[in-house]
Length: 309
Image: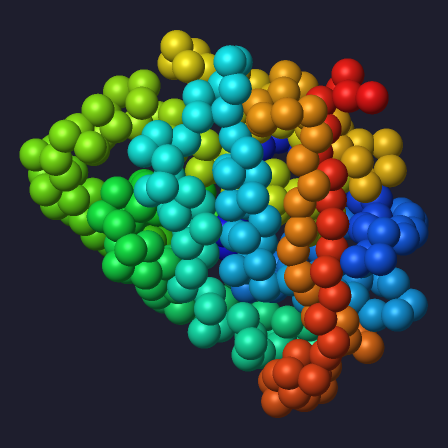
């Protein structure tokens, strides 16, 4: 991910009051509330003020959570992934470039793990570039989707850099977008001769694939980063209409989704995080060692149709 989802709207400014709730692997859960967000990139800080210490969720674990949503996506009201294997691969691999960064993110001047907005723009763009390349190693169509996804994200990044008068960073972001557009043009040209991909390279079918990636990514970000509820994402119906989906929760454990875009009545999702003693560290080496030694815990979230019993 590495940017706040452009296609998502939150109900409160500055992400508002965030309910810090998760289910442990043994099924138990606790809830508490704090102001602000635990959204970090390359890591998400989950339950940052838990006395037991926060859970560090990596970008690739976030992407795995997004993939689980995509795996169940689609019904009579919402378009299913198509071509299925490639769209699911794009969701799983869209943040693959963070793999090398996540174990050793470094710390900022406050001792917190480095976040995307504190990273030098060139380093952040290199991670996105690597994400596209890794996806394309598996499938050109998956690479095409990830390139388009990051092209949209970089539009927002360019604006943020210009707002900070970082013209050098903004030029780098604009160059990255141009690079992604060239890659997309090359892959489209190669894929259009293949009957498997030809129907999904433009028009409503293409937009549905890209919107599905963005929706699954965004929902996963909200769960991992605890950005609060309700929020909305958008996705396409089988006829191509763009529909808004509202996601809400009273306790941060079970999330009601309306209209329901998934199979069945309820979906249980998982990701993993590493428990550390705190969220601030005196040095990069201290953080890296803490993450290496930290025990891993499984987190579970539930999405359900509002009418589910």
